[in-house]
Image 1 (cartoon, protein in one colour):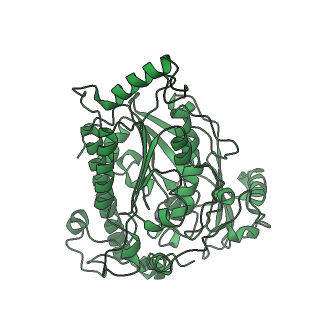
Image 2: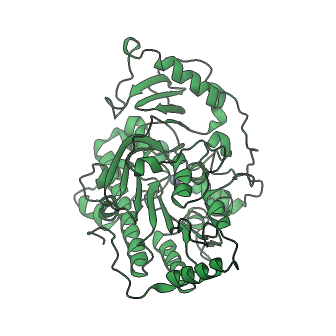
Image 3: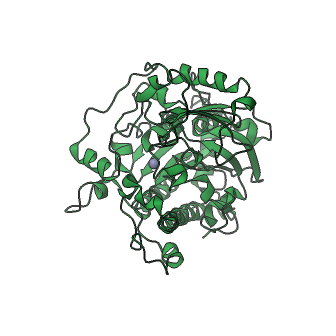
Length: 483
Ligand SMILES: [Zn+2]
């Protein structure tokens, strides 16, 4: 476990990375290599590691106020990192949210609106841009459909594909693997990258542990040792579907503890990953991002999981950016989005910005500048786009499906109605602003929502995967993705 930050010891030898750079400098000087950003002594490029924790609410991390000690490793990173206190996911769905993270585009723009859509080949990705610039790129993902069918494998030299265990169950176990296996593959790749001098590298690590099913962890067994309810042996995937457990405080608490136990397991895997990099002296100059694709309602506002609803428990994710060159801790209170990470990382890598992205670089915030209030969109499947025709009365029995954030204001809309919240005063979204205090923000934000979601058209070709193997579909259904 990392308890003292992730500061590595100084390497005893200069390492192949430095030797490679020295030879490149000589070749550049004599004109044998075309000068590039990577080769000839402009901004030296940095190793970049993006860790996505599936289904991880921001409020489960100690650095976001949690006091249960679930995430000591992420907290050790946060103690030396830029902590973005409010980061918005664009959807409570895995592939669309990751697609936004890796393109800087909204789901309405990149066209991945469900776990069954494929990112069009025409859309640039972070990995592809870094690869073009000479980065060695590797993806280590615990949910097979994301790399097999969602198109998020594009731009990676090495994609750690895995097949279902022979004779194993179809469905769930065919699509997901444990984080320990994902980590082991990543570690051997890091070793080979180091040995062969193929730096800088970009690695994407994805852990699925906080997603259901919840196998009890040592933490949750201890916390629930006196509990004899229906979740005593853990929880399958579909428990979220009926939501009947929400009627019981005891069952809701037990489910939360099981979830916390899985978050803790994911955090241990984060610690082991960073420890492995530290031992290889690959961390010193690196940039490490720890974030999540979406949260989990766990009974918040009467919702079970994460596919429906626009509440903060589903959309607010952790976002830590650790910069090996500047480890002063810094907290950024302005709202940002997963959509900002690709522009940010490209700038940190010294590469040109992508044209026509909707995300913005957060590098000014890393330097201590104040960010202007950003505008962020979120939604469930955007196929319901024409629902934004007119504001409607609130019906608490139904979920919201669309949201827009502007600073601390958040407008939600859907079958539940239309409601405006001020998150600075009401972070748990208990009472929509009454008409008398909302000024013109309600109408203005609603017009923006209409503009963004009102038409089905997008700049990208909507390209649902046509070649989804039946076993992948079966696996997605087993994970509760029934669309
Ligand atoms: Zn997910």
